[in-house]
Length: 451
Ligand SMILES: Cc1cc2nc3c(=O)[nH]c(=O)nc-3n(C[C@H](O)[C@H](O)[C@H](O)COP(=O)(O)O)c2cc1C
Image (cartoon, rainbow, N blue to C red; front, side, top):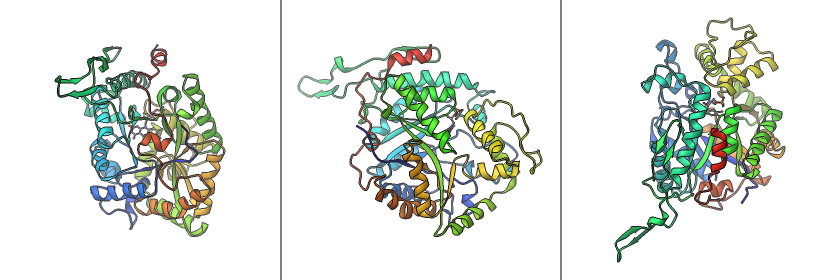
């Protein structure tokens, strides 16, 4: 199975995807604290026939000076799995993806929750596996220090082996419920994992039925060498931040090469890049909208967020000078640090210009223009093979997505680049991915990547 269309998702951000979007006069007034507001946006995405909605997550409120933090819109958010459960019963078709970290969880819990959600949603769930870039999370989980970068990925690798194994606990037809003989399940069709590894000892089996999708769709966000390696072996959707066509092309080609080397087809993984569209009736109007959004960014929060994304404190550096020559390697978010430093050097940006460019979209590509020019720019990367699609990260909701849905999407549909109707019912079907057979989770590669 393959999918000729773009894969499109919508980032459902609690306040807004632009750091100051919540301040816009038309943004949802309570910054996403009301379930019905979030639901309306998910339903709008479903009306537009998008592949999925996406929930990012962090396991802490940001740490620091409360005076500065009082300007930060990501101070609260719904716990994603709880929110997905509610969205699952109020939507019918759209895929539902939630972020969960492997650093502060146990695989049995995660496998069980996603398997249950896949049942509840009748096959529409995806797990965005992250390793936690926010070091402050450690202090909510009885740790004085965040795990080191390489250790986080090593743990993630084994964590995923366990989850994949647990999702294979039962054959599809294991539960016979034979009233006559009194046999509830066929013992031949139960598979006990019995995993013993470096980080986890997990017996299994999972006490949830096999997923309607075989297993939830494996999404991954992580673009460093370690992230790419994990993605090549297992990810079915890779969420990435890319700012130039050349880099995006290199990244997608690399992920597909790795998937192929791991014995999976090139089409078994979709690479989707974050994009923030800003649409106006004319180019001038779009640029005016963009300028207005940028003016809403308070410098204090701009610098604080830039420091967080860089893993390097720039808050006391001169605003109108470039970044220092040497930025030390971070234990936090290596791929994003690389992306930001490259952008700063490439475009000769001062720190002020850099925070304005980067924090508005958290480093994702910003496309400003008319509906036609935005559609054209998105189509260009897709046609060039630089992406399989996008995760839309509108400045604020609902207008940011409504503009895209009403103005840009019809153009992409006319070009034959996006569906006009859902042709399947599960998230896997929207993506054009096959339902996996029980037991095909690439155990050999698992062993290789753990070696
Ligand atoms: C597009 C993208 C989205 C991400 N979303 C989250 C998130 O919601 N929560 C989180 O803790 N980490 C998130 N991450 C962080 C990754 O899991 C990982 O910790 C980080 O990217 C460092 O790995 P890397 O250098 O391999 O990219 C995201 C990463 C990327 C690239």
